[in-house]
Image (cartoon, rainbow, N blue to C red):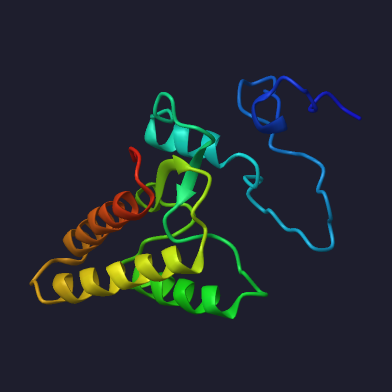
Length: 162
């Protein structure tokens, strides 16, 4: 079985001898599930390390929330349509909606609805139009869109981000 499984380790992973985290774990369903970065159950640890922050005190069920939801939502074409809109805008600005710090925030693990996905997409569409009217360099445009993404996340999901 090896020495990497530990019930007391964060996200089911244990520290390796060099102090880094071993990210191996057993897959619940290896045919239907792929997690190449080993983060499926560790987004909080990932965001905590990336942002240097902790979930806000007193937050129930804290979660490193993807403002643009991750996942394919294969059985929900309405969700797919909204996420496609958001992901296209994020891509235009070079923002990775899954791994970028600016695409994550601390929030309760809730609100993953088509209504909220549409609100994010609508907000990003408005922000894109406003940013496109400005004469910004690509890095400045990306920074502006990242700030808007955080603002949109705050208005829809609340809590403290980054």
